[in-house]
Length: 111
Image: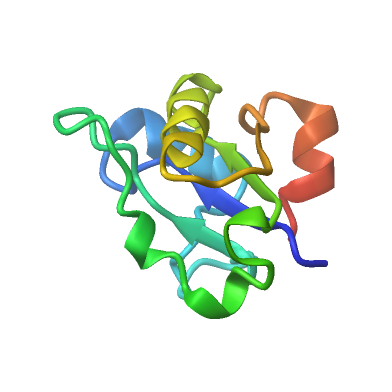
């Protein structure tokens, strides 16, 4: 698959560590079950942005048309990440919610 998962959780917040116990946080190779097509881009609450340039170019096989699923612990930052990515010109982005959204998590949580 060519879907890229953008994990908007941070790895230092207590609430995110709890949700990380449900599903692996992207971008932490030491974590069992790290998802290969997932990138950890924590939502920056201060600048209201993501470090979009940190998405490996090799994952963006269709450039800004590459399908992207955003998520966080519950869905709020995932939605902000989705809107931000669209503002940066990405055309195929959905918010997948978080580990509690079982149906979506089963589709993209193990990618």
